[in-house]
Length: 127
Image (spheres, one colour):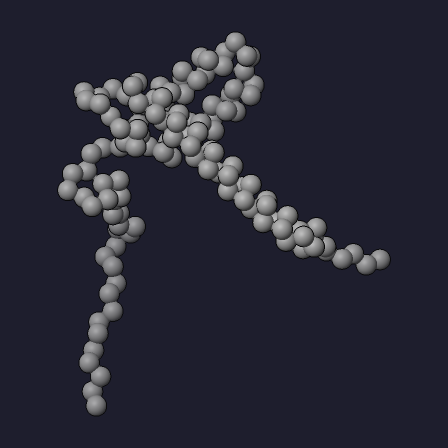
């Protein structure tokens, strides 16, 4: 018995392009939902001055969002608002520190190894 691997997208490349576009729109919607949730959490952050939403940590928000969605799927409807409040509080707890004088204030240079970097010695070819 012979089995050929045949994918339906191979016959219809326009369907594949539509799926890619649909996935991009879904990612864009998810990103905007995350940023909107971060904007809702800003007033809960314990700071002495107003805080822009971009000072909240995006990856932390994403992790909290995933955990909360799992909890909300199992929770009773009456408890969903309580879970949302808990999510906003958790997001507001992690604020990115100010890094004055940096071109990219959120970027940080980190050495990946405790050992010094091995730089090759350059020699001038004789000849």
